[in-house]
Image (cartoon, rainbow, N blue to C red; front, side, top):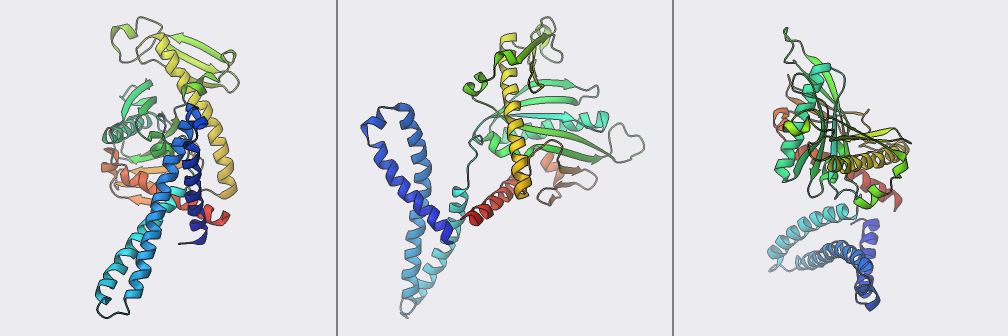
Length: 360
């Protein structure tokens, strides 16, 4: 194990002892907010410390087995133990490296996903519908709940714009690298001469803020408009001005909701989307600055970044940020995103590990 990594892990073991002491104090136990905060830290630190304890145990086992090699009667048993210990040490070290990576506090949050048609007219809107279906299918596989917050359908059955809310464990952490420009190359349904067209959509994934963050927006900075909703939703949706559009005047950011329920409900949901967009604007600006300074692999997640190409004639899917190409496009469009998202996560982890080592 590299020295910088061992030093980090030894600090975790020391911190675990500190937390054990703090959590035993009566004044801490009487402060529920502080107690819960320290308890969560204790859980996280304890997992790392337990893994490191197992690693040091297996290091001892390996050292003992190496000594046993000199005894002819024990040599065969020693070889088996050496192989077993070395394999487990390699696995444990990789796990510990991942556990030490800085955690994004938003990773555990629910998320809003915005999909917008770009260049390509009707074909782009149809591709937006395909992307919505792909992500919805993946959400079903993960056991997440999905809900369309707002939509602007196109004439041929696609979407000019659609906003989807996803609820489940670690939604934002899994999908945050999907933000950016998605390009499709295929023969459109409206093409009579079989020519391949290129069109594009943009995707933005936003962490859903908690209620306390939503309250921080100054009501004086908001303009709230109501209007008659359109689209599916039965008779009620077309008879009342239940749809809500909220504009954040200082930034010009707009959010709307027209899911067919009450105006009060739509206003609350639109405010959540608006808050998420404001936070994402700040996050993207910081990420772009950081990425420019360190030439980040994944990039800022800005919608203008072309991150992906879906080539249907070749069955090819390519992520341009990590130079990954897979020839399983139809499976991916059915929501088989595990390999895709895993590769992006691994690339980001590798970059973070390199930064940790440089800074050690």
